[in-house]
Image (cartoon, rainbow, N blue to C red):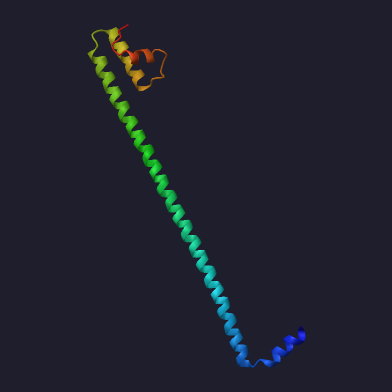
Length: 125
């Protein structure tokens, strides 16, 4: 094997050595370009994945905000209705019952009597 390498070494002219060096340089440069291209593709894929994740997160946040806004609007309406019911109550007992019913509208789990108060809004105790 060593003899074969020595014979090739003596057989090659300086021009042939230069051609081999240029060929080796082109092969190394080509491998480097291929590696850089593969990295660029991976970076682009990662960037796209991150962008899709941000878009999904923004959509989720928007849905959460929409539900919170709807709930806030519902609570505001319930408070206004409860306030109107208390103001229009003919006596203190009816006002207390209307206030309790208003609390139950906002938070149905506020007490054991809430289900009864909400089921029969005209009930007077």
